[in-house]
Length: 346
Image (cartoon, rainbow, N blue to C red):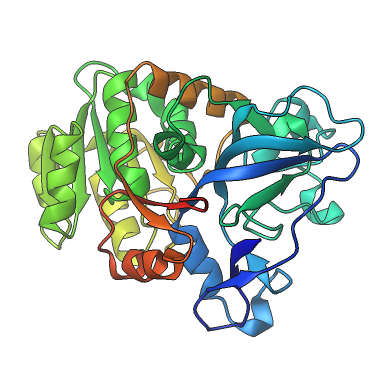
């Protein structure tokens, strides 16, 4: 089969031919219908050799949907022909966090060498994907695969962060979204669907801000040195009750701190390497800062339900498997409008 692999540290990913996978005991084989392209992959491919955590070559793609084509011995709960989404952050299934459905926070994944597809295990940008356990498959139930696949991360990750902040997002409150690309423009829709908060979106590009307005942002602000003062002005000087930074670089983290109000929730979702000091007098009183990671299996089901209800729709651009390297080039250049999706079978 064809697959997109990161094969050499510092090199671009390549489309190669690899052996077709076969399901072992308890495993499920999917024919991949669609796979998502994510900034996390670019972050992985930017790590130097001395700190690279995964064996190479690595088949990329941690967002995947497909059709069940084969079951390993003992695999139950799905049938051949089922259209499913893949829950990405695999865990051991037995620790206290996994028992809550929080495999994204599995307590034993590192110890046991369990890795998500595309982030250690072979990923979904391939013609076929081997899934370790049927519990990591969620029925699409009629959702279009191209529309659904970004929800596995670009929907689930912001949903998880927003759900934590909902008690603060009462009528009259303000939520700030920094970075309105794949995750950010989805977060705007989720905030509009789940809360009465006014949504203020920040980005460095007018094109991205145009998309933010199209999907429901009440206000858009260019993310520059003047942005904190503009946001403070929009909130009557009080600041926002929730801030979601989907970039996570030092400049955007500084903006997140500057626009947060008293008792605000600040979520540093992006993995741009920025950090936020916390201490008395450093931030407004009782600001909570979190660095969430993905979401739970139950939350993925909730996100897909929101999509079926028409409450969230990710803007996508599609590419063939042979075009996948170009999709990553465009993502790196910041010219993908929304989320890039690979169609391994056309």
